[in-house]
Length: 251
Image 1: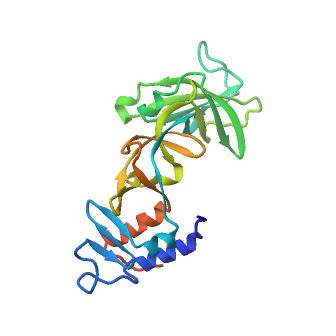
Image 2: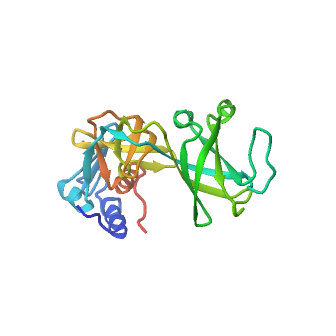
Image 3: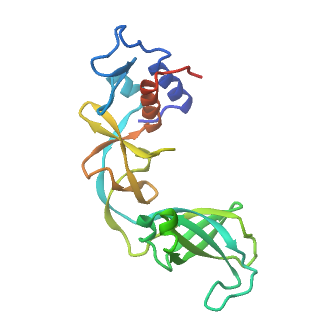
């Protein structure tokens, strides 16, 4: 199903909220949990949507499943050494810029020296490689430092510049539990998926791993066969917030 324009989704979510919903004790769904027009929320069970509501927001669900994924790890790095600096014995070499990125150990340990990467900065794409992985920072910030080498003969990358892109793990595809990238909701408090729980959709914390263009690995929180909402997860989250936070004004 074609997704609806973002403006309509926001307006519709507001219609599900306190702006159009029935307050508890006035014909709402108190027996099932906090209710809004077209949706109810029950602690521990999640959101229940009327069939008309599902159709209106374009709800789609899929099964989490094992598939062979050629893992691509998203990365954001900062240049700490420019290409014009002198070479160091057994260290960084002139002609390449070097950038550092911090990754959780679960991701960093899957990478190794020589893995290829693509990084973008200043509107330019740079091929790069993983130069080394430093585990010394794990105890301090629970991350590992991944150092990338970026050939830069023109000297366009400067110390302090940020470069974003991805690293492709070597070793080929491996079977892992995956869901479409659109099924993962990223918030300030973590990553979540809305998992089918009877007639409800329960927001469940997940830990993600490597990614491909279409899919993302789930390392914790889901099992193969779990049914999750693939879209629109932002609208589901907004609906839950309206129900649990007491509504508010729509803008």
